[in-house]
Image (cartoon, rainbow, N blue to C red; front, side, top):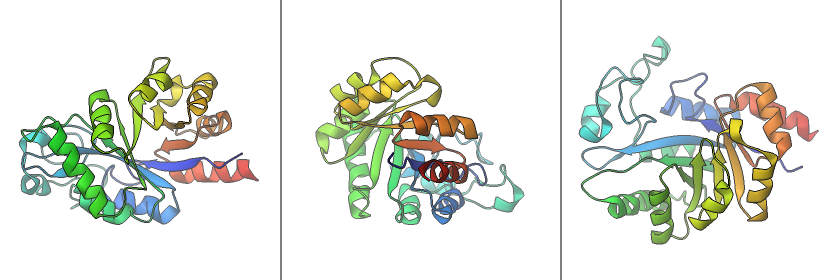
Length: 245
């Protein structure tokens, strides 16, 4: 059995504020195979790493990322709500995050809906240019629920590895193949062995999100998932090592 790759969901988000440099550094430090993160565009055309379209839940600020400049976002604290130990943590840019996670085998970047005056194609070109300039294109897998963005990215840049994200539904491997995707990223609760087999027959990988319990992780590995996206990468690494003995 080939070893399943472990991606730290939003960094090592069980022990550090999600989608921050400390969380990504901790994932690197424990030996995770990769990380998963999310990016949005600021008003002034910079990519920042954050899951939500607003900063209310994870920071001391409020409002839509798309309505703020990078400078405005950097004034907010993205660590103190998680723990006082992380007080002063700032929102990372895509570039700052890439510098931290460069040593990893897998850099899974979820792209959100880029509704920006520059337009979708320009945003995707900007994104691609950053990946190339940081020398990480071969490590990056780009995932999204946004089928249009995935299809357009593949049309513009055929050398980008793309993945269809979904939470439920059937025949997603076939759908992803039509979009030109290289992998599917299903929610683990809705993932069946039949879906994994269907993807593998098409030459596609399967990375599931977000099994966190030991039993859930072990089951997904034994089902044949190529990757596990989890808040507890340390737990997943231990389980995979034990299965591989």
